[in-house]
Every structure is written in C-alpha cells, then in structure tokens.
Length: 274
Image (cartoon, rainbow, N blue to C red):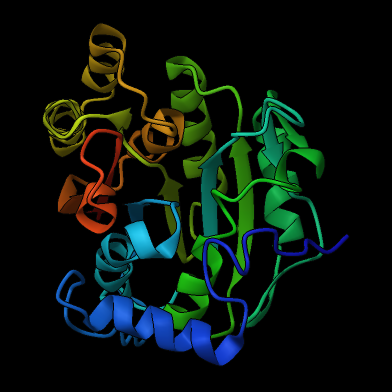
C-alpha cells in the first residue's frame, strides 16, 4: 500500500518546483542556518529532533537539524518517529510496505526493518491506519528528499503511546535492530502549545534543558510538573534512549515570530544527537 500526502498544499507547497525553492529558502534565509546541506559519503549514525508545523512557521528551525545531519553523510535508512495527533491506529504503529509519496517523488519503506522492529518490540504493530491522516512524519520527507536526494529508505513510526518506559524500550529495540546499519533517526515534535510568549519561553526552556543534559527522567518530570503540552515527548525520548551521543540544541523559535500572535504561541526546536 502506498501512502499519499495529506499535508501537501497546506503545510508545504504542492508544486515540486515551488517546494524545492521553498525548502532552499528555508535553509538560506535569515531565520535559517544560512547554508545548504551537501552530504557526501557516510561518517556515522545521527539522531535529530525537528518540528512538524507548517513550513512557514517551523521550517527554518527544522533546516538547522537537517543541515547538521547532512554533515554526517548519506544514510541508507531514515527512521522517522512522529506523534499520533489523530488517535487512529495502534499504540506504536509502523507503516509496513510500499512508498510514501510527496511532490518531490516517492520514498520506499524498508519492509524488512519494519518487520524486524515488530519482532523485537512486542508493543509495536504493522499498521496503516495511524498514518493515513497524520502530518507529523510526512512533513519531514520533503526535507529528507531535498537534503539526501535519493537512495534511502524510510521506516515511519507513529506513536500514540508515549509513556516514558515504552519510549525507552522502543529506543533500546531500535538500537538493536539498526546495529550495523547506516541510519538517521528523526524525532518529530513541537514544544509547548497555545500559551503566551513568556510562558512559552519558560516551558520550552525546561524541555530544552532536559534534552541538552540527555535526561529522559527530567524531560518527563518537567512535562508533568509544569503541564507542558509538548506533543512528541515519546519520540524524543526514544531517540535519546538509543544513546547516540549528547544532544546539541541548534535552534529555538516560536510561531509568534511569524504570526505576531504572542498570546497563543507554539514553540519549536531543532537538535542533533551524534
């Protein structure tokens, strides 16, 4: 089964040339990192944390993560872990087979890796339903196509169950399954949602501090204590649990910087783990 885009034309441009030009500008703009990715060879596995809002709001922040990942060269596999906003599907849902379509072309799902993850993690399921209307994974694929080009496969994982222990166990399972492979792993998340600017900065800083110190316990404790509405904590904790290195936070931004609405902001961040 092939997966058709649902965010094309809303979260990002639907015309291929417009989309390439738009992503290019996200990298080169003043809000972006100011240079284009140019991966060559392969120097090591890397994890990134990047947002999944509409490109106009969070795309330049995501560009920092993809530029940093590109410095490690081209992977064969990209695992993309996104939160389940819709409530459909299984608790841990892995798209099993086929291609994901975007305006920039098709990307093949790594069927064998998807199957082995399910064999090694009992709470994961091969499932289409969770992915059909979910944007949190899809919006990263054009960035990957722009950054890497072709020659890579993806493993899309949609997390409805983001409890701390589940996320840590999934990370351990992924580390085992991916051993010996050349991969990137993407944690898709936005930070605090729909509060005023001062509150957004305060709550986002707590998340950023926990990630910077590579502390999953602090991440979840801060979310619970301060009622932080980060949508992908389990995605981030999963990548952190793979023990790829110390996270380096690259960029933080808010939706208010674009919308001028500082009363109902959403926070975004990008980071690289290597």
